[in-house]
Image (cartoon, rainbow, N blue to C red; front, side, top):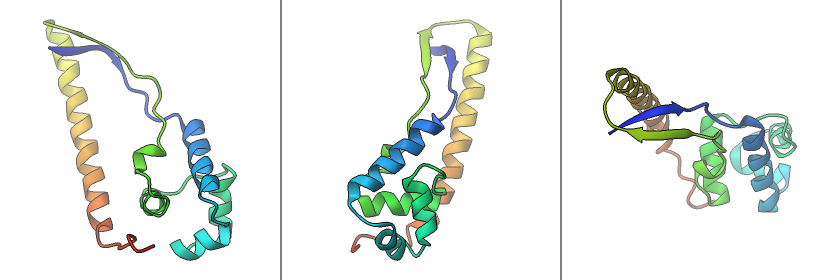
Length: 124
C-alpha cells in the first residue's frame, strides 16, 4: 500500500502559538518565576504568554518538562488529508520522496534532542 493525495503542510503556527500561551497561563507561574526556572528574561516568557513569539526547540522541550506535558502537546498540525491505494508507479515515487523527507526530519530532530538529554529538569 502507498499513500496517494497526501498533503502535509506543517504546523498551524497561530494555533500553536495560542496553545503555548494557554499552557503557560494554565501553569499559574508568573513570567518572573518561569524565567527564573529556565534562566530566561521575563520579556521572553511574556512574549510566549501573549502570543508574540514561540520558544525555540530547546526551550520548548524544557518548557514542556516544567509544565509536565509532551512537546507534541504544544504543536497543532495543519490538516493532513490522505487516501491509501495500491499500485501506480508515480504514487510510489512520491511516497518514497515523502518517506525520505520524514526520515531526514526525524534524524535532525533526534540530533537536536540528544544533546538536551544532559538537562536535568525532573527536579523542577
